[in-house]
Amino acid sequence: MLVHKPEQLSPERTWADVLALRNGSGFRAVARFGRDCQCRANPTVPVTIGWSERDRILPLDMADLARERIRQAEHVTLPGRGHMPMSDDPALITSVILDTIAAVAKP
Image (tube, rainbow, N blue to C red):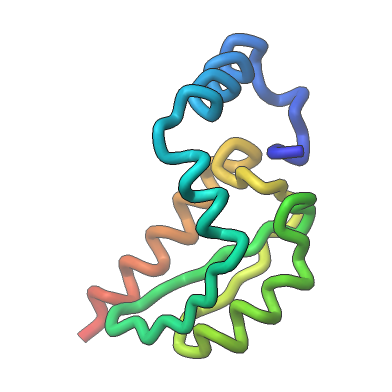
């Protein structure tokens, strides 16, 4: 459920990710908070929200709510990616981050 193409991950990487989720001290608290989150951010720096096209945990249609609540952000759809797009396509995520950083550097 977390990645769109799990076959791209080695068994070792998959096991390490499972253990990281299970043993993460903040995972349960974040999951509980996320159920009732009413984010109405007003960012003062460039923000990019990348929403994965094939996310089965936070479906793409939920991105409409993010667009409505955080209008000043740049919203991008990550085509063919799952809930953890950094695992599906690290180069794409790096590119999105670098584009956001470049927006900060513009005079």
